[in-house]
Amino acid sequence: MKTIDKIPTNKIQRASKLMTTGVKVGGNYLKYYSKKLVNSETTKDELNESNAEDIYDGLKNLKGSALKVAQMLSMEKNMMPKAYVEKFSLAQFQVPPLSAPLVRKTFKKYFGDTPESLFDTFNSESVAAASIGQVHKATKDGKDLAVKIQYPGIAESISSDLAMVKPVAMKMFNIKGKDSDKYFREVEGKLLEETDYLLEVEQSKEISEACKNIPNLRFPKYYEELSGERIITMDWMTGHHLSEFTKINTDKVKADKVGQTLWDFYMFQMHQLKRVHADPHPGNFLVDAEANLIAIDFGCVKTVPEEFYVPYFELAKPENINNPDIFLEKMYALEILRKEDSPEETKFFSELFFEMLSLFTKPFHSETFDFSDQEFFGKIAELSNKYSKDTELRKMNGNRGSKHFLYINRTFFGLYNLMNDLGAKVEINNYKNYI
Image: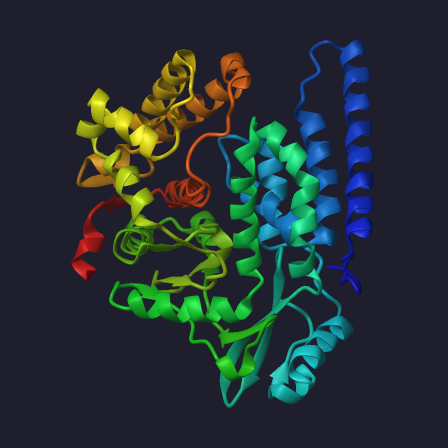
């Protein structure tokens, strides 16, 4: 893949790039409507493919939070058109890497030396490039190492990037009202944390140590003397990315083993640590030859405060969902309902969340759950489709719920999708064996 020597870092450069992309998308719509006039049976499939291609091409050279948002959206399989999911998922692995001179410049800035001097061997060609950084293979003292290098200027451009996409995001998710900023501050804060590689090393070591007793789960060792603000050095871990494993694996026993490990890892973090790896996309996990799960990225970790955790998981119990008084109490506790809501809004959102939670919490209603259940995921897709077209919902203020929903829901949606890809059947409370 062609390397890049420079990333647009100032607000004007990045806005100009996004504007160029917007012009291309506008042209795609003109083509679509022209074809529609000639042939009324023309579908949006071609439009979606063209838009997805142009938007991804525009974002991949910007990198940073703009590309990170595309990566996050690629996990929303039930909300986004297939063309967008397929194209945006490339943000996990396939984006143009930095050129060798730019990599050396980054090392000189943060370590005062070249990578070739710091390591016994250093491959100047990256093995993986994603939204915030890229990975190189190196060796030192007989050890194979993975060296993650953050793209220049990414941390500094996060706030301006989010300011540019905010109007589009508010329209897309029907967010209104003066307190909408709490959601954008939450995203901005998490993205800024992801650019702090010193914090990532600290989080990686803490969670690795806390989860060391979970069987079939592995973590790399981190080398602080070769890590810094924008560079992380860790053990090189061998295995298939989770998405690759699901494509080639035909052994149900292995799929269940990996799925149980993944489920136990997340439930242990959520319920025991109250801190969770909040970026569950397949690029952050490997599966080795023995079907062990390897977690390799802890840039995005979400702390789950008690005042959110308690009502959130109390609503995972059918007896609470089906008790009107308890259900209403938790709706207010989670900021889904507000005292100033009209009777129409209270009724509408109570019914919407009752339907959603009754379905989405189903895995917690029994001792085992089979994530290959296509009926379950079909119902989730139907529900997403139903409310995406609901004209009543567009009239309401979609600005609902605690800010903590953003990353906790993202974590569960991502986890469910990974479990479905694996087709795993798991024991729901097995994680309690490791507390």
